[in-house]
Length: 142
Length: 140
Image (cartoon, rainbow over all chains, first blue to last red; front, side, top):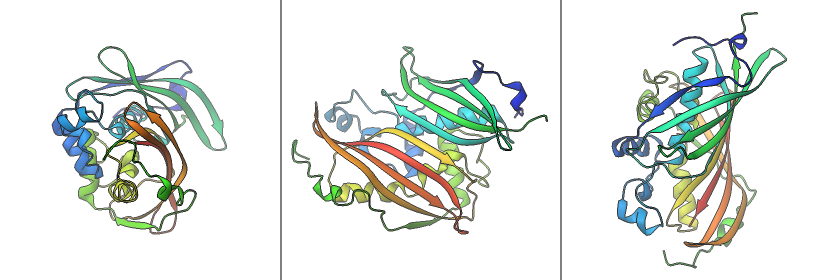
């Protein structure tokens, strides 16, 4: 994993995108890992009865993907301090989710070299199914 | 659950009140399972959890508690705001405290819908704050 430094980042620059294609198997793994057994994530008929067009990807899994987007980008020495996301639409298993982000701000606060980003998750139609923000602390070359 | 029978009054009585703390020992396998479920290279060795791992702590008990008080057919996540202050490692004992900080109801296309905000704080065995989380949840 390549290390990202504060000096490497500029406002408007892009976070290296991350692609995910969660399968129903991955939803089962997530359900077990976090203890979220809501049937809308594994029972198609139940999901339809709740007004959904089918089984949906857990919002929090998309949130965790956004977390990975950031930690992959910032490298071992980077720290993800804040991660916020708002789930705007549904992601369906089998569909590719493109996770992306842009640097909105960089500043030094005390000893910390902070970078803020806006984030999103996009479905294959190009619709943003989640948007978010992150604040990370990066090492500096000094 | 029949439409229009949501009775959130019982949850309203818990508004702004911290729930009793729940403690969980963090096992290597929990971290590994989480990392594998996300497909995240961080945490695959089970030593240090990816930051979003805090979401897994107490979540099942939280959903059980909420749906015992009000039998929502579905809880949909509306949003998550996570602040991470320290890494969570295998062997940690994490204590989580939940609180409902807001609750409003609205008539939606699926009947009565409850829009709830939950705050949670996570402390380790040294009583250090490791994470704080706010989650927006829609129950219907």
